[in-house]
Each structure stands twice: as C-alpha cells, then as structure tokens.
Image (spheres, rainbow, N blue to C red):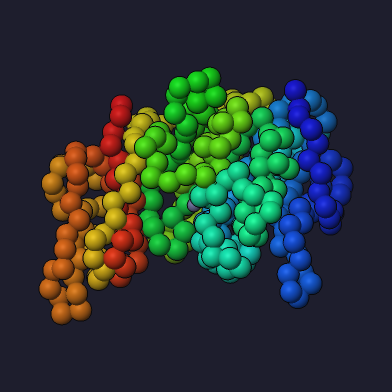
Length: 326
Ligand SMILES: [Zn+2]
C-alpha cells in the first residue's frame, strides 16, 4: 500500500519510528539553508501515506500548529501507514510572517509543480512535488486567511470529473467543516492541490483561520484543523475509530471579489450572511469620509470571507463570496 519512503537530507532527531529533519534546497549567503522542515512518522502496520502541509503561504499558521501538535501525539505502534507533516512549506515566508517568499517575492501556491533550474521558490515547489507529493496516497494542504482575511472555515475539494475528484469530496466531507468549497473556475493556476489531482492523488485544501482568528480564537481554529486531520486519518484507516459525525454541510463555489478603489473598507455584511444580488457588501471611503466606491454582490449568495484590515488597496480582495451549489 505504502509508496516509497520519504528521504530527508538532514535528520535532526530520530526515535522509534519518528524522524524530524529537512529537505535542503540551496545555501543562503550566510551559509544557512533554504529548506523544508519535515516530520515523518512511520506506523508499525502497513497503510497509506498521508501528507499534511501548511504555510505554502507563510502567514497562514493554524494548520502548521495543528500538524506540530498532532505529530507530537501520534504513536507509531498504533498508526497504520505513514504521516508526513510539513508545518512550514514556505519556511522563509513562515519565519518572516509573510505570505510570499522574502527571497524572491514569489507566491508558492501559484507555481506548482515547480522548476529545479530557476528561482528558489520554484525549486521549493519542485522539491515538494518530487520528494513529498508524489509519494503520498492522500494530501491535506492547509491554507487560511493570513494577515489580511477573515474566513468561515471551509475545505476545498477538486472537480468531480473522475474518481480522484470524487474521493477529494469524501475527504472534505469527513474533515468536518460546515462549508465545502468546490474548487472550480479558479482565477489562478499552479495550486498544489490541483496539480495533485493530475498526478492521481486526492488532495483537499482547508481554508481555516484568519487575521481576526489569531486575535481571539486562534486556539479554536487550531483544534478544528487537528480534529479534521484525525477525521481524515480515521476515514483512511490509519487510526482506530470512526470520524466524528459531520455537521450539516453546504457546497459552494467561491468568487474572489476585488475592490476597484482603495480607502477605508467598511464591511456591510457579516460572515455566513445570506445576500441578494446587487446588495452592497462593502463601502470604500476616502480620508474625508466620502464614498469612493461600493462593492456589490453579483448574485444571491453567502459571505464566506472578507478583508479584515481597516484599509484596502485598489485591486485587493474585498469579499470571498459563495455561490451555494446544494
Ligand atoms: Zn493560502
């Protein structure tokens, strides 16, 4: 069942079926490495390999903390298959509390499967694809609101045009959020979860945690991430027991609505609020209090996220808006 073993370039700790260490990408001017930290836990019993990664966008930390916490509690003697945890895929962005790489200003989750011969973030993407992703039987790639968005927790799954796509929806359902995001009509390419489907590997993309979440309910979001991983592992037969009963769930397509103008971003609709076509989602005003422009709902739908900083730049995300599919 299990695919090839995950090899690390530098092992810093090895103990009873658990290994911690790094994939090395390239040396920095100060002699330290651009690297990917990896935790590998090999169960005593045969089973699938689950890859769980976070911080492809460096400022989306809730999944990272869940991976670290779960890895500490997993016992190889009761685990079937292998758990591969990557808490900080874009490690330099993670360290800097930034969304994208501070080295080459590249957005990692737009360039998969990567390229080993160009810039360093391309090399990180390539190492992930070749050395981690291709060795997995299933993948959870955590994202979140980072420093600028407030989000309703949701889990992205792949289009249902093949068996792999159908399996991702199953994984998204058992993960256990109220909202499932059908990842169709994406306005960008090079997303790790989408590339995984092309390789025949089911991969889901939870979007959990946010700027506001870090202020007052970060712990709750980390626990939600951890519980979701355990539910998926139980579903895959890696851990004993059944997944927790799931809440009533809705499927939605996500539209990123961008603000045309910058200014003070006043929220007119709250999270999970149902909205009618044409209603105002946000009002943007200048420093004299005059309305510069408004952001309107393009169709009947539901608010799944919004810009959480007081000021917005022209072209930034104003609202993440859901079209309910059923
Ligand atoms: Zn992200």
